[in-house]
Image (cartoon, rainbow, N blue to C red; front, side, top):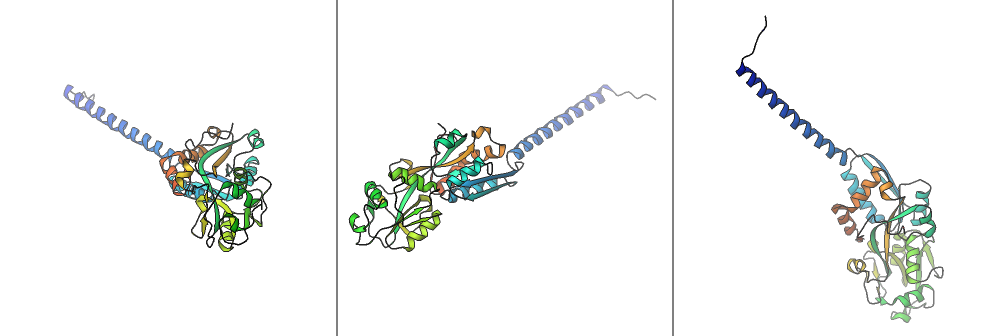
Length: 297
């Protein structure tokens, strides 16, 4: 037997179908939004590898930790091998990003390496805690590292020999320091050490010692000298009043926009409010334009 519905029943049924369709549409929209959120956070997965500057360790470790908290399915691995070694690893395809605490050479730029400046760092000139000398000029610093000045008494300190401590030849800190002080290939070192921490420890334990380290590695185990009347601080680095300011670079093969989604997410994180705060807490100054490829030209 055929059953017919009344006009009133049809209206009720139609209203019900419309309500169901509306609920379904809302549910679909909600799921789409959730999926978008997952794609930008928990759904991002894989690994990123960085290698290079030991001076950038404090900043890079903090950024890595924050990035992996934001993206739980991503693993960030970093090797602190020195700036030049990091760039070699990038060129050889052994890492995604090279950390460099010096400017890229023209040869490196010509090979397609792009220097993305993420922060500005000051190079602190450090002395042993017992040293009574607190301030020197940049000219005196040059004379100390070329051994034209060999006693602290010549720069207002005690009558004690100056022990010059430096980094190994492949160090980005050494390259930047020697370029800024105009002592490239003319420094006379008592010892050449392979890490920022080693220089810090050696100066702290050696009376009469002088060395250089990244400002973000500075501790109360040593004293930082005032240069040309300017102390190394976050403010004097940001304004570049302090004489020894250098870039912290995260180099890539090609522009950031040409990299994988993971690497692009890494640079986006660095530019985020959270990333900027992490860089500041690490004791360095965020670059005005983190991925401006400032050293590519």
